[in-house]
Length: 406
Ligand SMILES: *Cc1c(COP(=O)(O)O)cnc(C)c1O
Image (cartoon, rainbow, N blue to C red):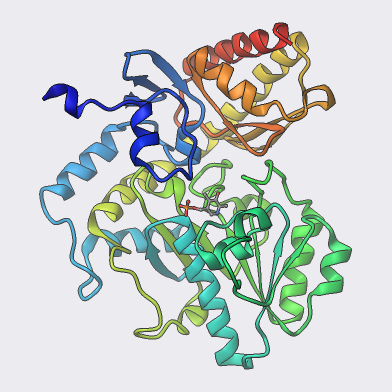
């Protein structure tokens, strides 16, 4: 009987839809910034489940929130509201420009809500001709059909038949192209205030400010996708606060739940009013379990010393990566902000990011890539200096092995 229940990586190929290609290892437990696989091998986690596990694994405050709520009430639907959702919404409005919150279950759903709201706002206020959505090449906004269409990689959106229309993609940080495109027909501009999946690309201050100004001039809504940058990841609670440019609509997910699925769309009262009763909805959105966990996460992340800690940890990472690069020169630059960092491979190492990821796994370290040429680090915001040091030592070992074998 025990054998029948045992599962391994081979089981994935047998019974899972093949849209992923997971690593060989199967982690079975985690604590802080360490996880252990089926063979009890230990890993340091510099990936954090793609910028999700912001308090590390099994943080006591999250476990407490989950088990306390789990013994009280799991689900109601939106026919009734619930206390954790109301408390969380209050906190998110206190921590941001927003006055209103819509809860969803993922980043894509938060963005889907943002895009639908922008289109509805335009139809109500200006008529259906104001439907153009401007987004950026290499941008990533999720995998629903609308969000993947707005995302800037056609390989993700092609091959599914007719797409939602009137979506334009421009090069990120190209102000001239943006000026030439935006008009009174533009309904909304959707962008990440630091592109994550696209390779850890920061906007120039001039570009992002000009986007805001031109949106104002043409009565277009500015939507910031902060699914990856939000909730302390960059050292500010939301990245827009560090950039100094405020959007009209903001989407957040990933670190919001610290590992429990939740997403949210934040906006002003005036814009929110266009989602009248029945216009949009979600069965699970604002679920008490998710909101109770997210509330515990937000309480910790919003502390000034935690946000300050992110900035200090960024320096440790940058120093450590530079030291490795001095011995094994494979990076052209380290970029990003806070604990959303990318080490870009130099000319000689183009296309090898995945090799580094695999070698790191062997050395007991979990990292991510952002495209073929960038090794990405999105660890817990609470990762200890010891775990950073030990993780960087394992990274050096991994890079050394790739370096000497090629
Ligand atoms: C991960 C991500 C999404 C999609 O979030 P899901 O929870 O996977 O739907 C959207 N936007 C950005 C910027 C992301 O990094």
